[in-house]
Picture (cartoon, rainbow, N blue to C red):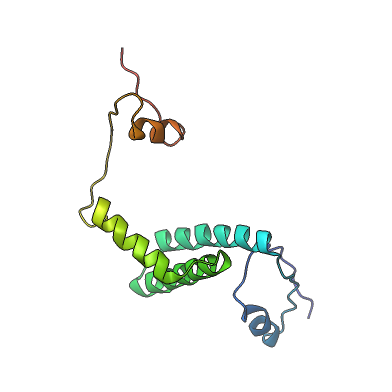
Length: 134
């Protein structure tokens, strides 16, 4: 039977190529250098975040969150950062700024000129367009 070829160009889990080979697939891959690997991990994190966003069941959500956790662990390892460092920083941020549990959704923010908030918003006007009133 003739195989159908698909261009994937994405980072796969380590055992996925051999698992697919066992099912009759031919998988072509290359081993990434450090810079490519870090770049592809970033793309994989975005892919997995989108899958979390579109999960339709609790089981799917758990699976996608597990994938995100694995990607985060790999990103940390690729940058020689321990998970303990990440968790410590997470706890510090919760102490300083809180979590997201109170569900505060900011619609408009008004900042003083020269403030951190103004600089933050001006850094990405596409995401944070300025509202100019006459």
